[in-house]
Length: 282
Image (cartoon, rainbow, N blue to C red; front, top):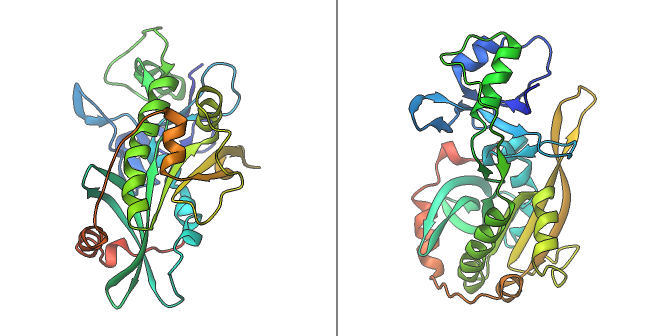
């Protein structure tokens, strides 16, 4: 039995799904466009795996960052960090914003009269896999009766790259949060609760504030995959922690510096906001 739990945003046990159509269209229901995860050997084929089972854990592990933008909940959960946002201002979600020393996956932006008034940076991190999930995907299609272009019967298992995923994102956050702290803004790291549990065991996390304090520059929002009555899965907030640049440095024992002027970030954001980035609650 395949370990793929969700494919192109649909639970693989869901009844009445035309899987041939789903696989042919390659449409991600969360991004509302074609799944960006493609095969290196065949860029015309989107992989589409959102969540998988691993080890003895009963809940699926999220392996695609786009899966975490379900219903826009992660953005809603950052509204309170827009500390100078006012009623009447527009809210925008601006993806892939470059800043000196790196980039952020999204910016939640408060806009008034087409001018940026406040913003929060949002970074999403899911677990990286070792090996490939492709054989599991192909076994799933075989179980679902969907014709395949190839017949991968490899029994080589995939793994979860816990250590590298956790260390890499913490190093990145340590670097980036100093940028936000310097301009008195907030940066949020969105992860699954299983990754947070690993980080808490393997790194020094006991100094992080729980529950989170709104004045801190660095926030961690962890989400769980909760089973619904329809036997699907839905994101739910599991934990909110906070700290600052020094706190992330304590987690890692590393030192880094990042400085940027507030005007530079605002200039970049204002060049990107448009009617297409305006936040529309689902």
